[in-house]
Amino acid sequence: MKHNGFTTIFVLAACTGAVCAQSSFQGIGFLSGAGHRSYPYDISGDGSTVVAYALDTNGAGQPARWTKSGGLESLGEIPGAWSLTANGEALGVNYDGSVITGSSPGALGREVFRWTQATGMVGLGDLNSLSITQAYGRAISDDGAVIVGQGDYSYGLPGPLYGESFRWTESSGLVGLGHLTSPPAQQYGIAMGCSSNGDVVVGWATTPNGTEAYRWTESAGMVGLGDVAGGAVDSGATACSADGNTVVGWVRTELRYEPAYWTESIGWTSLGTGWSAGIDNYAGDCTPDASVIVGALNITYGGVVGAEISGDAFIWDATNGMRNIKDELMLGGVTDVAGWTLLGASGVSHDGKTVAGIGINPQGEYEGWVATLSGDSACYADCDENGSLNIFDYICFGNAFAAGCP
Image (cartoon, rainbow, N blue to C red; front, top):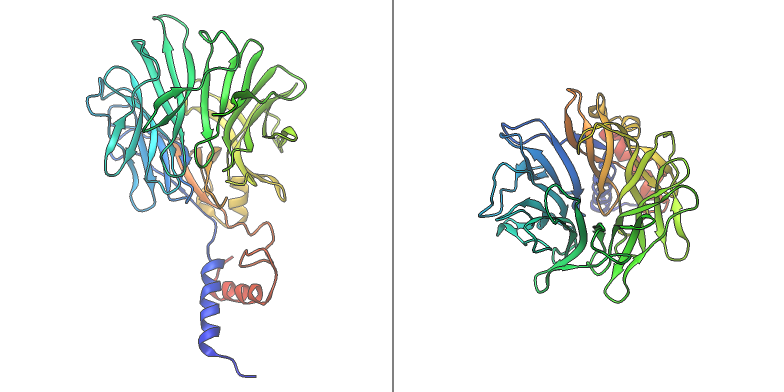
């Protein structure tokens, strides 16, 4: 039998590229010449861009983005900001990293911003007209056209802080989404995530009975998602699937907070806490089909944002269950993660293979990280990861062996 040499070489080259997409890990670093702290909040759907809070030369937090080619860089500030030394952060990013949202000092208080390379940072204002206000853009649709978050306000200092979830589009501006119960004046709500088109919004809001996760649509308004039996009334949503029909976040049981997901047909399903005996555990993000979920287990805090003392970043899927991300990397031969404590995972790419989170580096500094997981642990025999076993997996394995891939 005669083989076509060109075809054989083409197939070998294609398989080699697929199998050598190895696991990897790196810290995102710090702003040039600035304080040594960076805290990621989200990663773009294509895995190219991480958005974060990072200290500047004045010790203030700055909205920042990380890319592999450009490293960590500040996004600047809203023109006319009342303060250039007050804290800001980048909290959400669209699919390809081209549109970023967050919070930064504006003309009077902290404003929601929308950033693109062409426009720079543009302030979108605040939700409330009171003098003491601040607003945060926390999530963004895949195309960057819809932003969700919360507007905080107070009737005076000292005084309690109230808040309401919002949804923003260019045509509507910031629009409050209301509350789960009335009266709303002394209640608090946060929109944490949205569907790929921004039509479904998820988050949490306070009620007289406790904190409850919600799902919002224009037709149904804000609908509480309940919680699980046992413990105080306490649940929250941090993200949702592309269609908005699966919600991830946390629930409170008799013993602890547990990472969980919600569907209309089943309600809340806990992911369990794996190896963790800690009280604080949550799911932070999911893939578009919600088949992969990431978050943090066994968290203890040092009293300020970005000052977790301990924690374990996890990745979950129905086949493999709960896995420690650092352990997965070490098993994959990624020695760059040695000496790090991976405190939690805050974002995952659409394909479920690139994860961003916060950690403590070998120098004892809080630093963001990005990890790529090859996915081989699910079924290594499926070498080209196309979901079926055939002759091409045999060829792929041979190429991996020749190339020195683990």
